[in-house]
Image 1: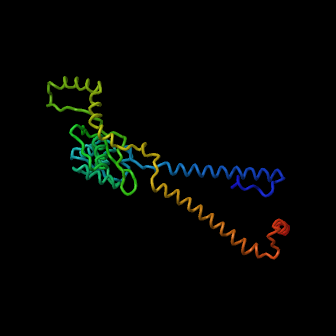
Image 2: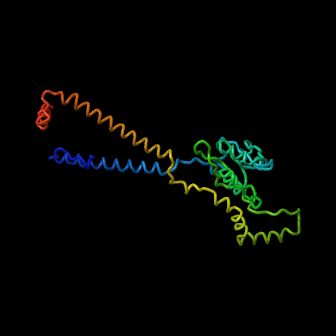
Amino acid sequence: MLLVVSLPKLPTGWSIRLLTGWYWLYCILLVVSYRASMTAILANPAPRVTIDTLKELIESKITCGGWGTETKSFFEESSDEIQTIGRKFETINDPFEAANKVAKGVYAYYDNHDFLKYIAVKRKHNNITFDIEKANYTINTTEVAVNIDGERNLHIMSDCIVNTPISVGFHKNSPLKPLADFYLRRIVEVGLVEKWLNDAMHPIRSLEITEESIKALMNLKKLYGAFIALAIGYLLSWICLLGELIHWHLIVKKDPKFDKYALDIYYMNKNKKL
């Protein structure tokens, strides 16, 4: 409107000129910042509240759980503040039942990092089956929840509680242990363990949707927000226009000195009275 509708009279004083110029710049900056904020709000997702450290998990009020009584004993017999997790730890044998509790935002499930990924992907794709015989189920992480709409999405915390990537069991004082340690160390150093794990997890990771891939997606609710803001603006504009028409027809036109053929003289006399 500032660019389309010109001023009825150019200001002559420098103070009025400066005021008009700064007001014009202020309106332009206000419109640009509003458009930029609207674009940022529509393009970015809602902020995520996650639990990524053991300290955050200890301070939270959610219940923890995992498979087997050995896991509960591991937390309870710890010598540090992790004992707090052991006091609220529950034994649960069905991982998918635990995943349903995690989705409600009141539960944290403790298991292997790759197995938790399998549970999350399997839960999203119920009609897909995976071969989980190749997976390494060493316990080393925890699964917590993140808010989405009605049901929460599954989130795996970044902290690793127990890092035991590979192990082979032998009898006590077995003579094969030094030789097995040597070959296992070489297998890990050349990257065979990582390759086998990547091959086993490839069908799961290919179906996993990362947060970066959905960061700038537009959904229907965001479009609702844009249309609501546009509708509010149109409503206010129509109210202002209706008020101007009422003022024109009921006040200005009914003035005895009003002359539609000499509007300049009418407004000039009116301004002199003011």
